Length: 209
Image (cartoon, rainbow, N blue to C red):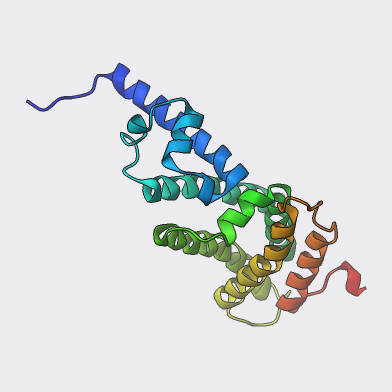
């Protein structure tokens, strides 16, 4: 007869898994993928390395779960910001503003999410991440075009180009912000990215007045 975990055992394992993921998020934000080894995560979580393998078969599997957790949090923050804006153009600006501002407040973690070399399975998750943001922006571009606020264009293609451009534009400031001798990123980065986004779409921003 196969062994079946009791509710108490399952609850303990679930709590331990949650502790592992919280510890891994902290390490990821501090040290990046390179410093997020199985042994380091286990040590931060206060468990034996062997116990960690009860939850994740290897670092790649842990990294994927970790990446998904952080990305879900970022998408939720953007979605919440979008819901507070009234027009499609305001909502597009909110996506860029929220994503960029949060990235610059946690530059080490954002650098990991966007550009730090990682396993192939994590790179695949990055594509999912980018597509999620693309889809949020594409929905609002389509609404703005339908309302006559933007010229006709392919919403999905434009959104994908914007996500790529914003990520590339942030790469330098993020790397500088978490360098050992760096200071904060220039304060004009976020408004400049919002302006770029609106102009790239064929719209206007306040600085055009």
